[in-house]
Image (cartoon, rainbow, N blue to C red; front, side):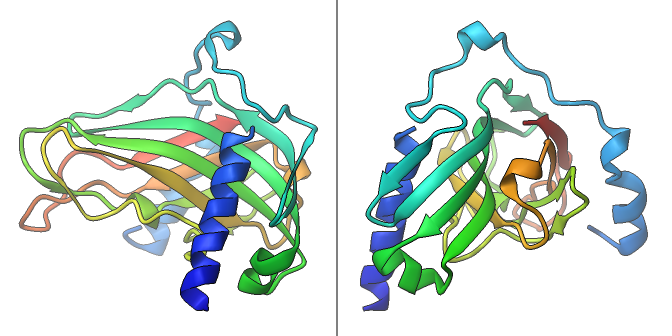
Length: 208
């Protein structure tokens, strides 16, 4: 039953998507949201249209999901070892129904959704755990880990030039999705096969 509900949950999330650090001191000093400029964007005219416009609601068997904000104009983030392409960063609220409601044990959720692609640019295997990302919101909320019941497991070993894609969900606990004006996204640097850091940490601020 649990396996069935998990598959149902992810299928419903696909419908919604397509319808439309080291230590406390380092975290405090290096990850201050106001110390970062907003991530670069492409012109709005070049962005792909989403099937669910901002301000409208997608109705599915799993519930009704309202898109309060979305940024689908971000340029890919290039580092020496990997590329992260944020297809969309969205602020969404959902009123849940059916098996999805039972699966999560919630009537309503407020969340930030990251739809991403990660590519290993190097000529060696790397271990990159995009699933370990954390976010800080304009409302002052810090979410250390994505929700494991919803998020794709974009982690593990990447072969040279290998690309993985998926969606990561952060459930808001103290804020409403419609209140969030920007999100800071932080991902740890990848590791080589000896578990030594290579490349650099990703730390960007995304306007919604």
